[in-house]
Image (cartoon, rainbow, N blue to C red):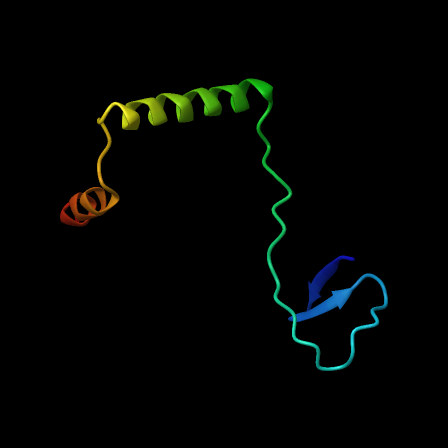
Length: 73
């Protein structure tokens, strides 16, 4: 079942048997990305190198990175 938004309201693409007033949790469906095989391989290689760097103790705590970024303003 899919839903679209029209004029700020959800419109279902087929009837539902849910009773009136049913509360739903909605999530945005990410249909993926536009990476081709070469780009995806480059991404995975970069993630692997980053993980290896962290495992070797060359990582930085996220709080430290954010604090440093805040001082750049």
